[in-house]
Length: 345
Image 1 (spheres, rainbow, N blue to C red):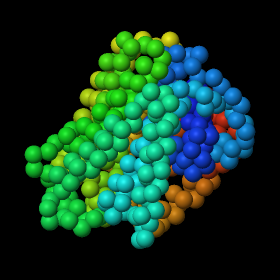
Image 2 (cartoon, one colour):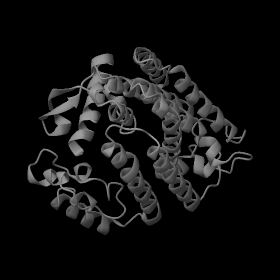
Image 3 (cartoon, rainbow, N blue to C red):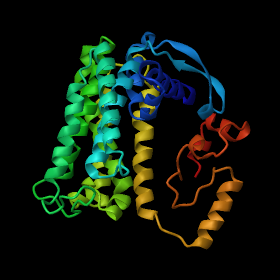
């Protein structure tokens, strides 16, 4: 399963490189590769493989990856570019861009958005709607911000009158729902469109809420917008919304006709539930230890090659290939191919 997942991840990265240059590889992310996975799960023959050359992120090993000709990989690349463009624009709007870089970020965002539109058109997906959801998201954030917080990067963390946290997650839900549904179009399975759209909306809700929960401490410290803070949503309520959405996601996936569903069930079932538990456990148990404890934990982390992590580490509980410092080593990371060791923390 790990090799299958990596084939889609590396395939997405290389598709971005082949279609939009080396810099576009920065937009690779774990969420959009699901579009490639879903397309192949519905139509296995639509994701040809090829052997990719050595890569530093794979410990300078070759690997079998999804070819850039695969329509699912091209859809994933298009969505990656458009979403990354939206994040750049959001950073500029929040005042997070380093001094003097705002204009360059806007130009790069425009370039990525154009490249995403071109790739999307090649697989029949109109990215204009996706780009519009980014503007809609920014508009909702402005509504949730006090008029007194006009300065970028200094938004009022107080509750937003008349807006719920689900109002703020709605644009992400719609965008992911549309992208998920289009995989059924690519696979020639129109009967899957409604269920995949519903699954995408639930996944978009979870992704947005988890990002908000992970970033809330930092956002509050620098006065940046955070949907949980802006709507006075507690961690317990956010966890309940994520658990409900994960249940709805599982039910929606049951109605999707898939030729091969194992990887889909692992990524959108098992891993989503783990991500929810990991995020809210970290938020509940995180603390800022003193220098003695930090030093001791640093030594222990070093001696175990990164496999052990203290409870305040954001990498605690992640798969071992994300914790290990020496990914190219032999015995250490090969353990990730077994069934049980990745649950260790």
